[in-house]
Image 1: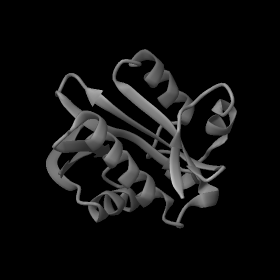
Image 2: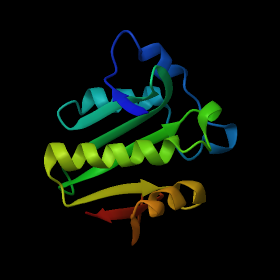
Image 3: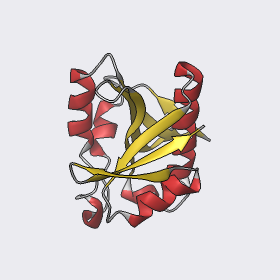
Length: 145
């Protein structure tokens, strides 16, 4: 069963050790970079380690984007050892539920590198649609709840 756990001194090394395949590295920032952003934006960033029971399989971060006044799926990564097992989709659904229950959101945004077809298809599989906006090399997608 997929669960989120807060990132603490007990699991931070596990989070930092997660990696994607080499061919995916241009699509996603490192977890260290994401945790640095979470630290700077601590009032509006919500990072979690993704576990399958007691095995860490990935990292997710949601947040509130003040400049555009909306909630966003900021980062989702599944370690290369655990990809293609459904963890990404389950983590994505859990992240959507987190934002919906905690903040009562009616829509969620995310950004995807346009060439990252796998991620785009994953987001589409739970209802995200392209908005047509491409900004800073990222294609915006929106999920209306």
